[in-house]
Length: 395
Image (cartoon, rainbow, N blue to C red; front, side, top):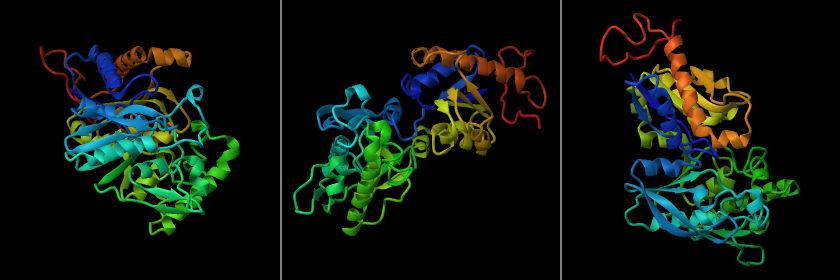
C-alpha cells in the first residue's frame, strides 16, 4: 500500500514538512508496512520557500528592509536555475505589538530588493515570487522601486514608495524586469474594490477603518496612472491584489501571475505521487469555503479525484463552506482536536494532535473502507504487503 501525504503548513505552529512527518508517524503505527510518500505543499504564500529548501534548494542571504523601511536581513532561494522569493520574508506581516506605524505607511521595497538581487544573479533564468503572508499595502510601489521605477507628484517631486504616496502619484516611469518574473498568488483578489487589496486585507494589516475607502480610491487612481503611461489595465486581473498589490506590481514590471498551488505541485511531483498511491492525505489549519479557491487542500482533492484516488483531509478546524470540498473530491474531513482547547494549546500541541488524528484516521479507513473482494489487509499471508485501496467505495 502507498499513501501520499501532501499537506499545507498549519499556520502559527508547524511547517508543511513537520505536518507531513507527524501524519506519517501517526499512520505508521496502524500500517507498519505502508510506503509513505511525503509531498509537503504550499499555495504560493508563506511556506513556499521552505518546500523548495526541503527539496534541495539553497538560501541566498541578501540585505533587505521590513515593511517600515528598516534594515532587515533576508534571503531568497536558488532551486536549480530558478529563484524563489517569498514575499513574507522581505515584507512580512507585523503583529499589532510590533508595528511602528499604521498599515498605510508601509512598503513592499524589501520584497523588491530580494527580487532585484535574484534577477542580477547570472545563474538564475527565472524568478518566482510567492505572494502571501505580507504586511504592506502599497500597490507594489516598493517592489517596482527596487526594480528601477520612479514616481512623481503633480509638481514633479519624487515620491517614496510607501502606501502614503499612493494618493499623490501623477507620473510614473517603470522598468521591465529583464528576466521572466512570475508571481504566485494564494488569493485571487483583484487590486481594488470590495475584495481587493485594501478593503479585504487592509484591516488585518493595520489600515485604519477610516482609511479603507480613501486608500482604495488612491489605489485605483494609481493603477489608472500606470495604465495612462503606456501600460495595460492590470487592476482587474486575478491576483493583482495579492500581497497588498504586489501582484499588480509584478504585472506592471512585465511579469505574469499564476495560482501558487499548481506551481508547487509541479515542483514536488504531486501528480506522479498521486498516480502511484492508494490513498492521499492532505490537511491545513482550518478548512472552509476559501479552501476550494486555490488552496492546497482543494487542489490536492481535485488532483486525486481526477485519478480516482480517495483523499482525506486532517484539519485543525472546520468552518463554513467546508462541505464544498466534498464536491471537489474529498472523501473525508477529519478534525484533529480531541475536544475544547484554547488556541494557545492547539498551536503548542499541534504535532501531537496531528499524529493522534492521523492514527485515528488510519483506523477509520481500515475499518470502514472495504475492497470489492477479499479483506483489506490479508492476514493469512506472512510478510505480504497490504493491498491497495483505490476504488474501495461501495456504491
